[in-house]
Length: 113
Image (cartoon, rainbow, N blue to C red):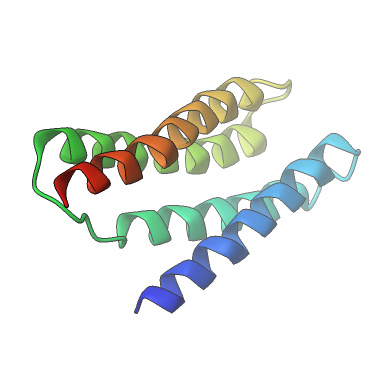
């Protein structure tokens, strides 16, 4: 199952990046669809990733990671339903959460071993 989750995350990341670039470069008709599909793949992959450890810190970090993934999907909704660039604020919040948890989760998992 792990190779499938990893592949799903990789495809989702490529689609989300492509959707963002297309939106910025004036292809606004298809960009929200591509981005939202990619963000959905990322969210599915992160929700199905198992937690390796039982500490409260790891559980908190996983909740933050899932919240960041859901914020990525919410960004797709903002791309569809807002007229200006409000989606950039939501994407920034999601990116900060994802970046923080990407560094902290492996650090906490290594402490438990």
